[in-house]
Image 1 (cartoon, one colour):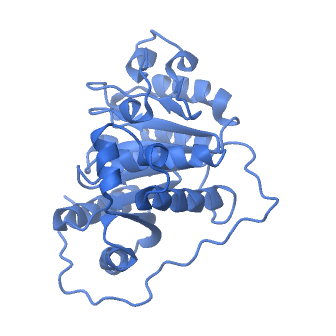
Image 2 (image 1 turned 30 degrees about the vertical axis):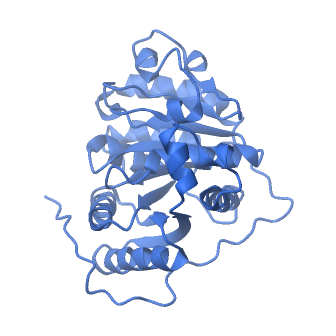
Length: 304
């Protein structure tokens, strides 16, 4: 059994944490071929993970990036509400043979593609290799049309969450200042590092007062992960507490589209720009969309 308990109370604050600036991509750099995949995940529910995913997708679309979001929160899929679409079909219909993928994927008014999940859908880890291969084959046909793909996982350390997160090329862990969020984020990192061989994670601090608080959260997690897990945590950025973001969430809207001048909207754009730099080659990612899907297929055979 993997021990997932950690405390952060007695850690010294490190003035210069491991947040190396992401180098800007060359001016001529352009994403060619399959899209890199970023899993947006969290150890605890209620930290704003799905809202982060939707707003990052909106910010990327506003930057003229071709982005697809895969709703992998199979038990509580609700990205369709935030993106303002009403899917006719979901992944449940695809695996039931009721609809092909091109009829399931929907596009919102900003051009964001969504592969919708559904409540009560059979978890991906229980699907057969043939079902996963069918998904791979159909997604292969559209991957070259994308610049980036985001996977909104469930929360916690369930098999479905770790399965999707471990299959992605880059893992973004969303945390908040709540002690439970920090402890559960460490638990998630520990499971992914110990049981799935993942060694690099990007930390995004949400609902914080500013950069200083975000860095304190990052430093606490980074020191603990490096000491006990030999895993590298990198600082992706932070999203501030913002009443305009709260109002947008209450209306099932994205603050990036509702209030582009809000501090939280500008922060989402800044984080999206970092993802763009990574996707364009500023930071080496571990693969692309086909690689993500093939790792999903291989995972069933213990291929990690």
